[in-house]
Image (cartoon, rainbow, N blue to C red; front, side, top):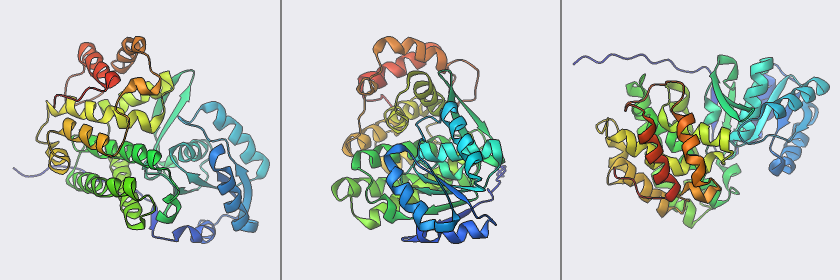
Length: 353
């Protein structure tokens, strides 16, 4: 049968390599900018100030209040800071929370963004923004949200704690796994998804045993880039819907939620499209769901939602929210099936498929 698909590349620059972050100033100049506001979380504020000092006259200072799930209230504070400093571009240093804040500001101002990831989130190469307000997380897709420049420097990930490395990588892997059965999938994305998963499968066990292994850190960051490209190119489905529900409405931690839910959502959909998820089984062994579950255990990830503080009483509401507002998924979405899936994930039970 003749192939039929559409592929559209994204207009941004990716710079990858040890020491690549030393060129941030040059990238600011290339964008035609001169006052870069550095963004971080409170935890990385010291690193943010160090970067701001390195930028010298190119720096417009630091805003270090980025928070998980990109609360609109924090974005509004950041917008005031942008106005006060006269910033003409943004440099986001950190993980998904900081990247999300940069995107939220760019969505409102169209300021150019340079992102320097220090985790494996992958969201830095997508035109997607998730924001939380009034207990609900919503997402939008807009070209203004896509960062102009992404600088991957594996050296900056050497200090990422092992536990955060594991959950961040599993979060990235979720983008690739869902991309394999995306409604608008195409051969290029499927190749990137499989290669991203393979890179993570290779790198994570090494990082767990030797956190300062530069080759493994570079391989994981390479995998994160590929997984992020999948997320930015094709649509997501059940897994991301559930994770956004749990994070936005129950304040569960972002990466950890993705890590726990991944085997269950992929196992659920494997019943409908086993052939599309065969690369997952090939890479991790077993079936798609069991292979991912066993791998998560092997690298020391938590595998139960109850470990995140979610109560069993929350599961009914979570299932209700996760089945609202119809969205595409390769397997029909019904309340009973999603409620059972959430129960398994809450208990940390190994998926059936």
